[in-house]
Image (cartoon, rainbow, N blue to C red; front, side):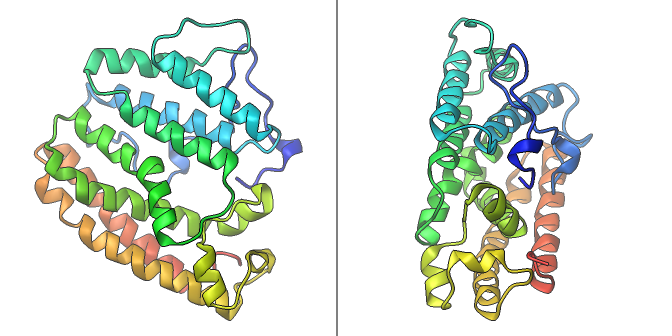
Amino acid sequence: MTALAAETPPPQEGTLETPSGKGRSGENFPVGSWLIRRDLRPHVHAFYRFARNADDIADNPALTPDDKVRRLDRMAAILDGAAFGPPGEDSPAALAMRQSLAETGVTAQHCHDVLHAFRLDATKLRYRNWDDLMGYCRYSASPVGRQLLDLHGESRDTWPPSDALCSALQVLNHLQDCAADYHALDRVYLPLDDLGAAGCTVEALAAPVAVPGLRRVIDSLLDRTEALIATARDLPPRVAARGLRWESAVIVALAGRLALRLRRGDPLA
């Protein structure tokens, strides 16, 4: 999210997608690693590509909010079976996801939920409080874990700790990228109520280092995120698929390490 508008790739010719060049190797957690069943990995990768392309649209500073929403709506229509339109209105990622859902029988709702989150990213730049932020994570983060669990045929009993893990990862990503999001997109996920209580405004994110008030906000958010990670530790024992159980344990551990790194470091520096 650090690219300036002039450095942002234009829409891919013949499609509505605007690929940023980001890929699975740039994530803080494994995506469809060798721990996942070989026959399911292409479906994991299809979901990642779908979400990545939608995210790139929402984060493209060269597009207006209305254009972002229009492109995301078109992805939703293709996902639901709409025929490809004229040049510039196609989405190979949405078509591949539609084919994946047809093969696996997994509901399209998780895909629609993440599209809802990216519409929020296109139109909403501030979050009032922690509950408001968790409401966003319900659509931006939780569906990712639910998609993976449903793909493996796991019980719905796995959803609560998975939701906690995915929300924790989302908040950690917000904290890690808080300065970049503010500079590139004027988007601030840090709750305004927390900033106000610490005597800060969003302009504190423009500083080269975190001022004491902002540091308190970051630490407070890390406290709540670590509580989510504690809940997430119940996930691996509930997962029946061995590879997914191991991968979920790895991701829980990575979340704890990233939280510690943010606790010790300064995301603005």
